[in-house]
Length: 125
Image (cartoon, rainbow, N blue to C red; front, top):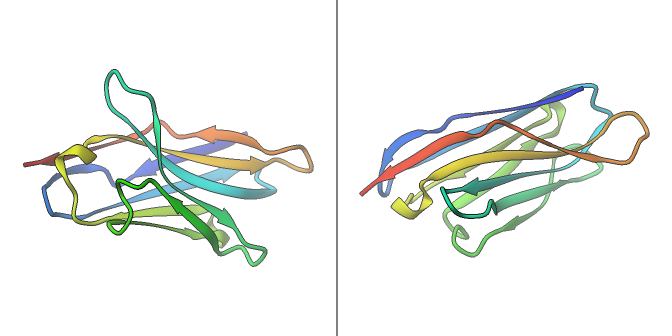
């Protein structure tokens, strides 16, 4: 079994910063990619940022939604199976529940997606 746990959400004023953490644990052979998504009521979950794994176990290539480019940075600690999302210059429209997704190989089986329970980020104007 694989568990994914997010932390670091909270309430912040517009222009402020938050750092989200995502830790994956359990029977992990390899994590191919990790990503952050967000969702607001009545809307579909959307990709915020994702990062692949390099062969060295550190952060590989990153991909960002246009709405967060230049403000958010995703990174990985491959040794700890952890991903981070540094969010700067936050805007009220960034308010959402943020979810972490890990693409995990358990043994030599094909990779599967595992999701965390989400962490609330609220940006006040």
